[in-house]
Amino acid sequence: MSTLKVFIVDDEAPARERLKELLGDIAAEVPTSVVGEARHGVEAVEQIPASDAQVVLLDIKMPGMDGLEAARHLAALERAPRIVFVTAHERH
Image (cartoon, rainbow, N blue to C red; front, side, top):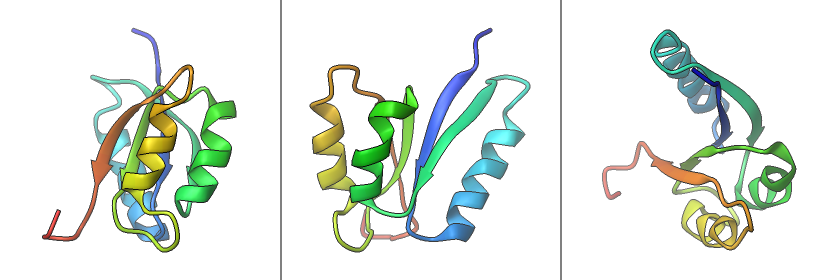
């Protein structure tokens, strides 16, 4: 089984760490490699193209460029990664 390349985007460091823990919990069934992290949408849009990420775990609510806007930019990439929205906000 090949390793899934994951990029994590969340403005809160504890949330990014928790996502890495959860990926570790499923490592036996789904091997993953975290290929990058960003604190907001602008960083994500700048860094993800060079990361070769296959999946992006993307927070919805972040300062500046939020996850929904970042997802629109990422969807336009030639090799667009799959997006999984993650949030602690009940509204979403």
